[in-house]
Amino acid sequence: MTAGATPTRLPVDVLVTEAVGGPAVATLLFAHGAGAPMDSAAMTAFAGAFADAGLRVVRYEFPYMAARRSGSKRPPPKAETLVPACAAALAQLLATVDGPVLLAGKSLGGRVSVLTAGDALDARVRGVVAIGYPFHPPAKPEATRLVPLQTACLPVLVLQGTRDPFGTCEEVADYALPEAVSLTWFEDGDHDLKPRRTSGFTADDHRRAAATVVRAFVNRVCG
Image 1 (spheres, rainbow, N blue to C red):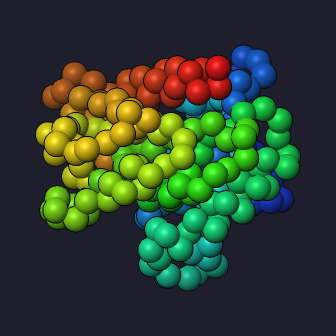
Image 2 (cartoon, rainbow, N blue to C red):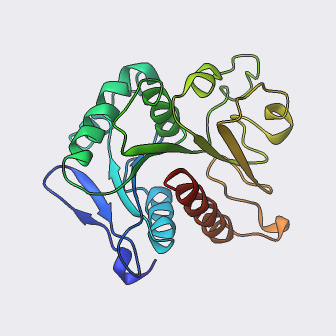
């Protein structure tokens, strides 16, 4: 990751990764997945890639994950119960940064971000980015989670690996999704967009490509 993108821990319990090469064109409020914290290797790698694409990335943790730092073993609660935490982080962010903001998240964090966008938000919030959206639990393709995507009040970009067990390319092709939801597929990617070596791609390849797609989405929704 570029030196200018080194995360800094702030008193408000977030990690800020500043845009590289100039002022940020927008800020991503980036939530973690169910099992790994905001400073996990995958979250850090994605934040660095997005920063290299000219975006400020602000990572935060849901209360159950923050509690694990003190020894708690609380499991992830239902996604719907985490919407207030996302909304509170968003309000805090809007009070401290200028310019457009997008909600973003990996897996559970993406689902919560989309759920939060089901209500009208501040006009500065322009869209949602979901990495590895959990369209359904693994091995339960009938238990779809499409309603949040269908009722979101903002444009949504989903970045998905073609072999993601939470929703493969073949499965998602049959879903009825609104025009406001756009999908970008990453060949042979898993739930972290990580491909197998035999694919000819690397995780860094897919993260850089994801950052390019996200920057284009930001440019579109921010005008």
